[in-house]
Length: 327
Image: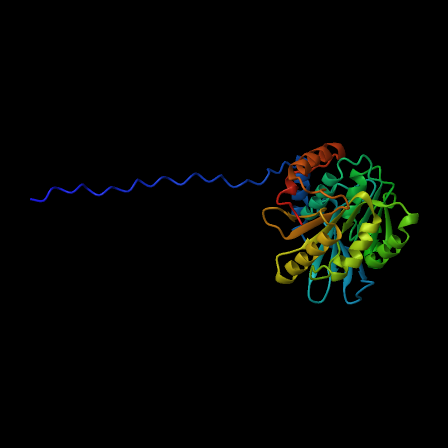
């Protein structure tokens, strides 16, 4: 008989795949109890129909009425009433004694993200004396910045609609001692100021929050000319924060165009962050003439913690940088 053949070699047993690192978890949000209660207070108040205390036709679009509705617990909302839609533009909570809007009563998440991003990037600037807000609405953002930056001599706020400005300074309780209101087209106003920049002090912070009735950001407000005027109005260390809506094809297209424009206008000094991080319907774009202003997320997180402590922010600024990436 033929000699026995050796058995064929058996393949080596498969080795288990190396363990994959767990995905990074969003930073825990550690808002103050008072801030959480504030948001709950507004959520409860808005569930009830408000009582109109102000109603006038828009100065920009007479077919739209600008209304202020009064709710429970001192809350008031700025409401745009058009034939095809009714939208709450913003809300404030009045102080029972002074009748002025309480600066820290700002439950709107994307505004907190704007404040967190701005103050993190400016944490090493000891005094923020010049602040500009383009697109005032009820005045929630300029009031908030005036409160957490008490060294600012005045917060300039530019609003296109004179009726909105009247509502803000009247039944919505905007403090005239902290906010200087300019009724004008924001792009034209900024162009005039940029042209005279050599004779005026530059801004430490510029915030832009302008949209039409469908939440579209007009292309004028991210054009190369507009961003050149923004840059000319900023101090070398200054920061601009710009709110964009997202979640629909046209809104997303405008956001991507704006990111490209900001990247070109502020090379090496621009970023974007979703708001809120887990389910974004807004994106905050920020930029600075200072290269590398947003290059280190860890340094920005540490700066956000310092800004929260120094400025007395009632919300977790560091957690609101989740998802930040450079442009």
